[in-house]
Length: 231
Image 1 (cartoon, rainbow, N blue to C red):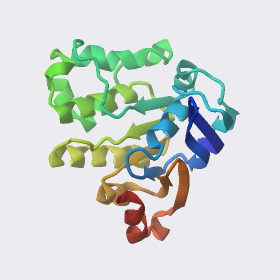
Image 2 (spheres, helix red, strand yellow; image 1 turned 60 degrees about the vertical axis):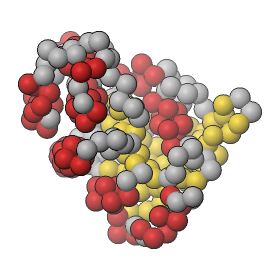
Image 3 (cartoon, one colour; image 1 turned 90 degrees about the vertical axis):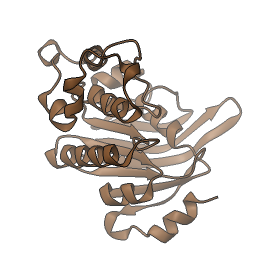
Image 4 (spheres, rainbow, N blue to C red; image 1 turned 135 degrees about the horizontal axis):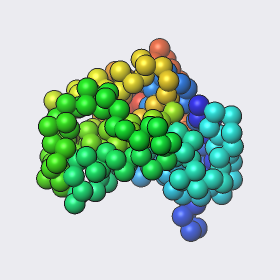
């Protein structure tokens, strides 16, 4: 579904990504690991169209989208759950979920039942404002909003950050369910190594804007990965 090849990205004179290549496959979870500031979020912004790349290519389902704006990539099935959640605090839970309708066709402008099956708490809070929810509930809302877009590529930027353990388990179960459904690729950025190791089918480790390790669950070397994630 996703193929990133030799991508370079700059913020002014500072280079954030250096020749990054990455793939994400339907029915599998690809986990991107690394310390803060190594380029993980920059890569997600490049993939989702929020930050232009200087060179290289990004393809979705074989189509080069390197120069497409973010809303066009959303229409092609890219859904980003950003770090910090970025829900609309003054909108209700129901209204937040419905913002995910923007890129989908009219017949799909309905919140999928699976959103409430995966996160039952959202159904009990439909009339509450997003800003009144706990951090864990807001994270579930952000994932639910992405799922209303019927994504082919679901991109999650540190979904466990600042979240209580019970909700982390709920998020892990949801990711496992979505992978097993077999109709989307999942790209997960994570710093919680155990969570990543449990879910990842494939992994890549970034350091200083480059991918320095990659492989599959079977070749995952926790000690080697941990060295790249500690200062």
